Length: 107
Image 1: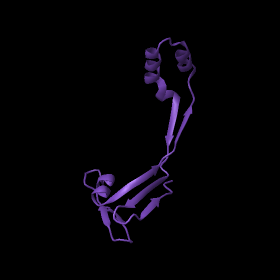
Image 2: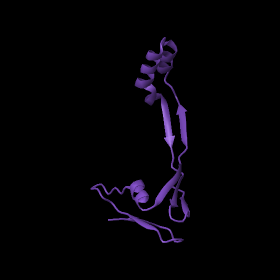
Image 3: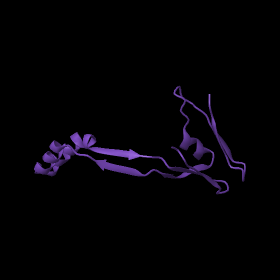
Image 4: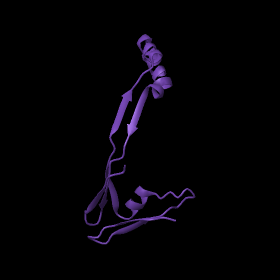
């Protein structure tokens, strides 16, 4: 079993994140909050690129109502738009003294 320890060396506040499920999942936000730590900010830029198929754009340009347009988007948008998210930073703050750490380089 693995565990992750978050410890504030300034005031001694500490929490161990250990798995509690069969899939080795540890509850990050809940455990941090219960031990007076917070995830203050997460930087996750989103890149959206589209490469629509011709029939998709044809359907959209020929739709006459909002309902028809929404139906086309609901049915086909996932095949015509690529969404890429990348986690860049996670900041953990100590609620006792205000010190923090920013975790980076997730690539």
